[in-house]
Length: 152
Image (cartoon, rainbow, N blue to C red; front, side, top):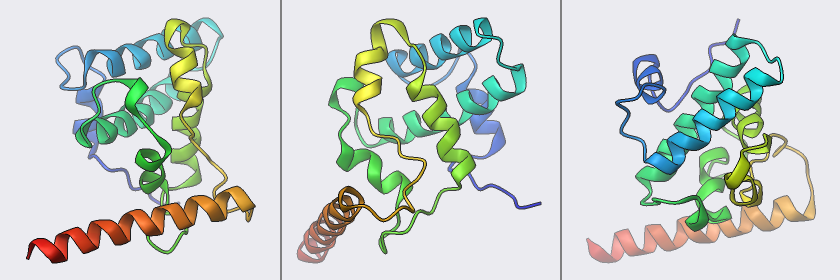
């Protein structure tokens, strides 16, 4: 059995789901609403927990980029989370599906904002949109390296 690597260890993931979490209120509320709606749909507790954990880790990573609201998240922010410098997917498909499950759910007032954020479980497909995103990612990383080398 292959071990799935997450950005956070299990203790940190568990902490994100507790009330004393450091994740911003809006992000935590999205996860809380997801848990309630999918429980009402009859999804198993284990599946809800896994999806909520993946979604929490993703939102915490986005928060650590400086975002305090769903409305400020762009494709440029989400793409590096899923794709490496070489354009290949580097998170497991299971992890992407967990995050995607949260972002595709009916989240009430947050649905419109969450549904505009692209979470793509199938990044390995070769499409013109994927190639465009890969080029965007490469240019963003090049700019970041240029800024870092200039500041040295």
